[in-house]
Length: 155
Image (tube, rainbow, N blue to C red; front, top):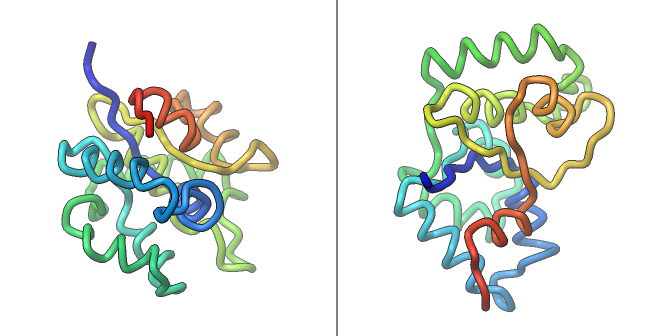
């Protein structure tokens, strides 16, 4: 069986770093993410990097060290998929609050890659959230805990 490949969202990185799997206590999670990055199995849109840069905290420093390995520039297939996603889900990005700007790029990266990636997010279904759009677009998704389980990581 082919190993899974993931497209990770800002919410997953933020929740994991600050709330759920703090590096001080859950180093094995971050070691596992580094291994996935090294294997080319964990990617994210450069738009996620741009979102995280606004905070400029320890998580961003971690991302900055890995920028060339994990963050993917927007190519034509991804851009075409972003256009498709936004046409079908125009309320996905909240331009008034300046939030969720990377979301369509995370899903488009996943959908335009062969084999298709799993989106890793900590968002919950709601009105035009990542899980809702993934369901509508037939894109698999999971949370960080699910990724840990899928990869068989233990402390």
